[in-house]
Amino acid sequence: MRAKTVIHVEYELMKAVINSKEIGMVIDRVSADMVPLNDPAAAKRFDNGVKSLAQSLQNTFVERRRHRIPTNHPDYRGKGE
Image 1: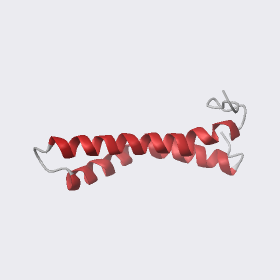
Image 2: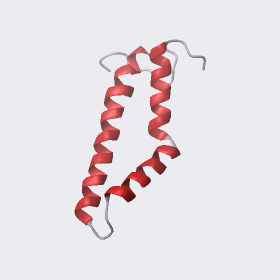
Image 3: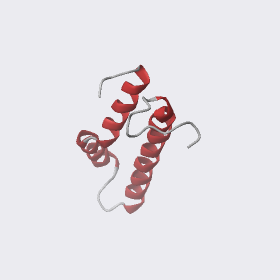
Image 4: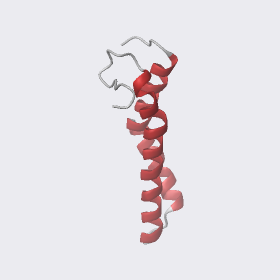
C-alpha cells in the first residue's frame, strides 16, 4: 500500500518495530545485562517492564493513529470504535 500520510507511515513503522525479530534480539541482549542467573525477582521485573513498554507503545503509537490511517486500510477503525 502506498504511503498516503505521515500518520500512515508512523503507524506502519511502529507496527513493524513492535513485531520485528530484531527487537526481540535487542530485548534478549538487554536482559542478559540486567537479569543475573538464578534471580527470579529480576527476571519477573524485566518481563513486566517489557510487557509494560510494549503495551505503552501499542497504545501511544499504534492505537492513537488507527483512526487517521487511510479508511481502506485493513487496520482502520473509526474514532471511538
